[in-house]
Image (tube, rainbow over the protein chains, first blue to last red):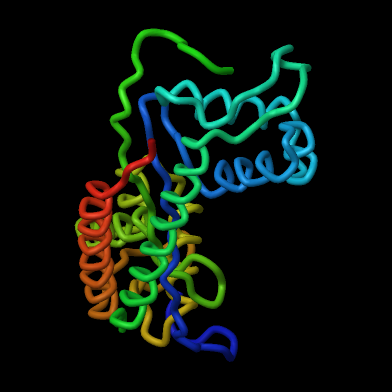
Length: 122
Length: 122
């Protein structure tokens, strides 16, 4: 456990991290959910959005439902028909959520970069 | 998917996150690894440290080995005998790693608190 192992002893450490927003039911918004919202905006359909992310329709639907249940104004509106049914549309609240998350994401990456430079372990 | 579901529509969102340090082999230091280092310091033994965390000895040993392999100066020194053998001791590099991680952890929590207050989703 001590001494030398292999040749590469580079200490090129990198600070990594993840941020997400929790609501009353657990995760409300994270990287994957925000990309899903963007794809729904792009395709106007939960099933197309899901497909583009290699995600099952059921899983995508549950994520959207989880987001919508945790806010007053839903982020995604679906056409009549429910589970199997019509198209889906990003609402203004959905647009704002995407924007707010990327702002947070940028701030977090700035924090990581800034902090990364000040790390000294050994 | 739209309209009201249940009674509680509180939008008490909380920003959450996780940070860790990556080295050449993937994770170098994270919350769990640092607690493990602290327990090794406390107990002078990897197996006692593992037990106190409900972790298998094998897993703890692998974590320590992974940390040690990614630095010039090992964080933990073990007495002769290797896998089954004697006690374990936190080195000065180990102390520094613990300190540096908690510093980072505090900075990150400050970032989360500060940023949490500025989040507006809807």
